[in-house]
Every structure is written in structure tokens, then in C-alpha cells.
Length: 318
Image (cartoon, rainbow, N blue to C red; front, side, top):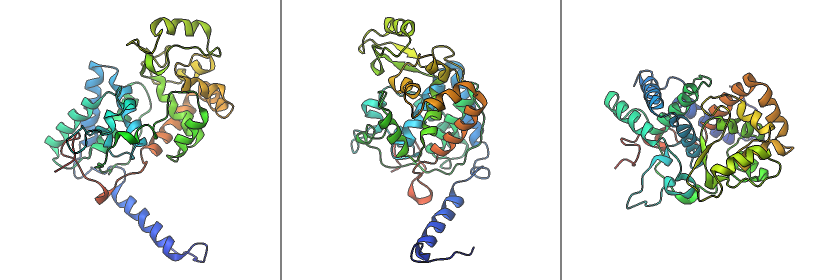
């Protein structure tokens, strides 16, 4: 490969960047476990499917786990670590993490993988596979992802709030949070479509007082969640809550977005047109969603010696 080096692009910088790229290509690629654990992805898929048959809430739960994990410390399974004497406040103890669910899916998959291929498949990859399979099991698209992620050893509750988007209606904050992860405004809107499945607790939005919201919808929701202290949940997509479709965006256009951070996507001119396009063209959004998920899944990766392969997803190796 021939490169012209000058004062604006020194050869040393090029060699560093090219070397880093070669490291990524050598440690992060499709079919990473083809030789070391050929059934790895199939085992994870089987676990997701069996757990989903038992509890449909597993799919949005796992998808949300992956999102939270990637936005804090990168896609390195740091979210899965339990409190210990040395680290009593890992990410999962943060207030914004307390409503997360689906950890047992990763635990079961890890146990099966350790039985089949001890010390081979990282928890970070298991979570990535499970999130992908959670999309498929609810009727969403099937797609291939690269693997080779390593598990992180750092997990701090204090890092959650600064990195996870709030449910509030601040579009600038939303855009900035996604931009910090190298995700565009379009990708932010696209990924928000994951709210086509899942539920939200009353404390995230109650009561609805936004006069821009459909009055009948607000009245209905406020009966279930009159205050934030009521221990109820409401589907994020109240029309087709268990189907991975673009009805979520159609609801936003109809001013029936549950979370303030959802409805603002339609109300704000920065994102309005993208919502309209996604509401109208399911195939387009589905394609964009896959692209955005794949990109998000490469956020701040630990590769090679930068991380480890945990024996237990809930604790770092000795």
C-alpha cells in the first residue's frame, strides 16, 4: 500500500492507524468462533428462543441490556458485573440500571457455552448475539455480526448517568449523547425504533401533561400511571407491543409517544422528517436499524489483550 506522507499526514501517524486497523481485522470478524466453538451463535439463539417462549419480555429486556452496555465503557459486558467487596457499585447498581432485565438469558447461555467450549466465548459477544436474536424472535430482521469482543474489567455506577440518554424531552441532550458514541441524528432516531417492543415504568413518564400528546391517549395512560410512584408499566408501543415493526413511529406521528424522549423525536424539526420516513417505509427503517445496530455494537471495543474472557459473566476472572 503506497501512501504519500507529509507534514499534514506524517508517516508515523499513518503507520499507527494502519497498524490499529490490522489488529481489529485480526481479532474482530464474522464467524469468529467457527473453529474454536462452531455452535456458539446457535447455542445463544436457542437460549433466547426458549426464554422468549416462557417470557416475551425477555426480548426487549436483552435488547436494552445491550444498548446500556455499549453506551457505558463500550460493548464489553461491564454491565453484567455484580457488586463485590472490591467494587460495591458496578454499573448495574446505578439508578438508571435498576429496571434492566434479561441477565438470566446471558447466564444460561454462558453456562451452556462453558460446557461446550470452556473459556472461549466472551460475555460481550454473548450479549451481542442475544440482542441480535431478540430482534429476530419478535419478527425483526435477521443479520450477521462480527465477534471477537473481550470482556471489560471496569464497571462503575457513576459512569451510567452521564452516558445513558434520559427519558426527558431534551433533543439537544439526546443528540449529544448519541454523537459521543459516534452515532448520527439519523441513527439515533433509527435506534429509538427499538421501543417498538418493551415496556416503561410509570416513574419514567407519569403523569403525561404534554398538551401536544393525543388527549385520549394521555387520559388512558394516566389512568394506569397517575403518578410516578405507582408500580405499573405501559407498553412503549401500545398498538403492537410484541411485534418488531415501525408502528412505534406511526404512533409518534399520531402523537401517542409514551416517553417524552420518544415524542420529541416527532415534535422537533431536527428529527421530524426521519420519524415520518420511518413511519411510512418499514423496509427502509428495518435496513437502517440493522446498520445502526451493527455500528453501535462496535462502540469502544476491548479486543485481544485489552480484555478477558470471563468464566462467569457476573464477575471478573481471578
